[in-house]
Amino acid sequence: MDKTWINLRSRASEEYIRGVTSFLNFAFERTEDGKIWCPCVNCVNTYRVSRRDAFDHLICDGFLKGYVRWIFHGEQCDGSTPPIPTNVEEREFEHDVHNLLHDMMADRVVNNAEHNYHSGDVSTRLGDHNHRLQGDKFFDLLKDA
Image 1 (tube, one colour):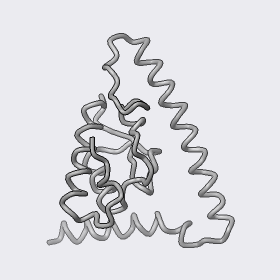
Image 2 (cartoon, rainbow, N blue to C red):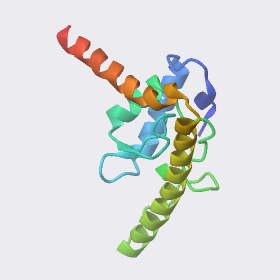
Image 3 (cartoon, helix red, strand yellow):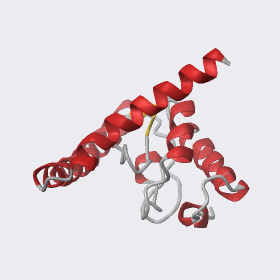
């Protein structure tokens, strides 16, 4: 699958939007609960979100740079897609591996956030909160329209 769209500057381009849609199709074919780990630059594969939320995040915030092997979304390290597990033991093992990888990534994100917080970068500390407030205001305006 072509992943060059991830590095495009314009997230409003047709190519980027097609890439996001292809990614979401790929990821949601491999989920059982209708949610995926969000690979946007803010969530960094640490939050499970719906398809609509993932699309919004990827268009508004951007796709995590360097995340080209979609290991949190069913792609194996060699670039192929894994077979669907047929028994409970295989599913439990995959779940354990996924949780281990997720925990490793979450620690890295937390450490980076702590560093930014303690380094005095107020915009980093408030950025996500402000982003969500702006998003809420935007959706309120849409409802009123």
